[in-house]
Length: 84
Image (cartoon, rainbow, N blue to C red; front, side, top):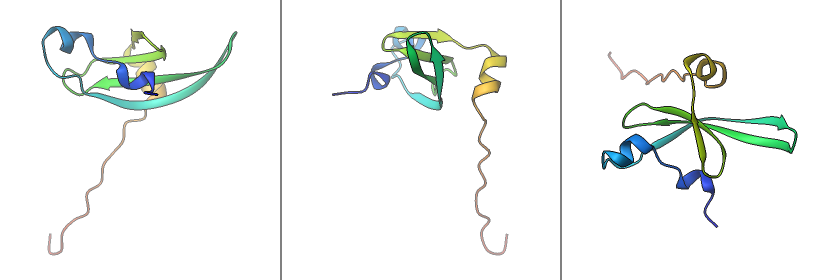
């Protein structure tokens, strides 16, 4: 069975005939009236659109404040070569 997360796509890129390239930036568990629910925060690697998905086929845009609260920006440290 394919996880529904991997069937999501960026609608803007789909319309523009660009391949959908989504990056899962965060995954959080929240309590709802129906029980625990996992929300995925995703970013399109083509256009930069940010959204969250909490149901199989439902995505919603995420504002900057919510994005900063749940998605920690990773800082990549590359090893320095010898003699650098």
